[in-house]
Image (cartoon, rainbow, N blue to C red; front, side):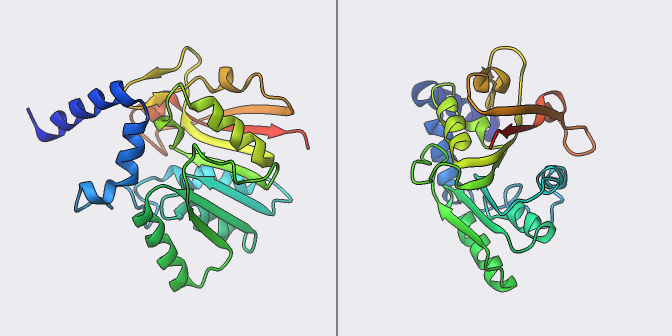
Length: 227
């Protein structure tokens, strides 16, 4: 058995025992678990994850946007792309990996970017943010690591602190949410009870931007609120 398959079995065992806490530990301490932890994670030139341009296009098409928060921002690559499209607005990102955050902070210092803030914070703890604090709140392949016990609370909090729009780039199913090394949630079902929803649009992700399960399940979901 290869080391990779062995580690996958170990992870599944801990997933069973402690739910999404195992993924939280993995992403929080990823830099300690591997010497080449940056590979496939810190996307410096947008080649690893070309879907970013599609996601940013959806965000930047919205008018009168003054503030944006990203949940699970890594080193802030999405925020830096947005800043090029919509310069000068308030941009903030949170993540639980301090190494990734420091990488992003150092990059912004070199580029003299002053309107992006990166903070050490979990997606499961957004209580410090005020209602309607940001025009847009979005996440990119983060909720797939939040289990059935916590996902609705995270979505509710994202919805609470957004003023105009919540955008999630995740894997979605129209059936019952399921787990297969990551969570594929039924977001339509999860958010149907939320008040003040003006519209929900599901955009598929084609193989021009991603591959594997992302072609089958990948969606960029725009949830617009009544203001």
